[in-house]
Length: 124
Image 1 (spheres, rainbow, N blue to C red):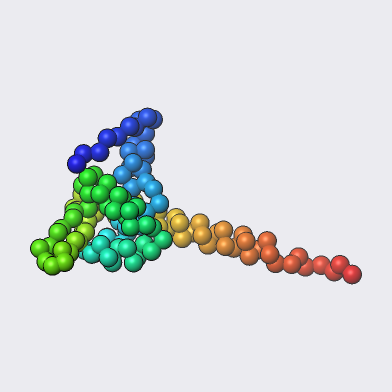
Image 2 (cartoon, rainbow, N blue to C red; image 1 turned 135 degrees about the vertical axis):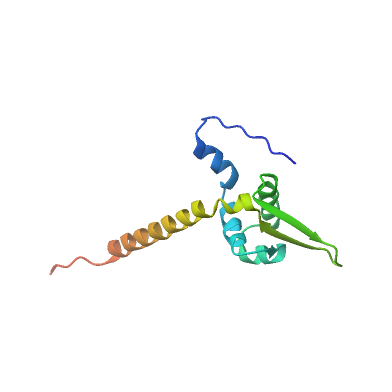
């Protein structure tokens, strides 16, 4: 199933974000970079996302060739997802985003902590 794209700006970053943008896609991809996962595992790892949203995001990632879906002929049927070789090319981008996010959280937490600390001085 091919997706329709409407790249309005022509910016390459927009094209990247059309594939990995959104709240759950990057999180799902990061978990899949660690190895093949069953649908139920992904649901537990991304507990705040609804089942419908996880399913939609996985379908879009599959349509874009980032992940592969494997249905195993068992009773009950088992579905597993894994990164494609093409999808693995996103790893440096996501690692960089992860590092930036970690630094940003540390910075924001330090700012919040500093704003809560009482100022030194005597107010008697």
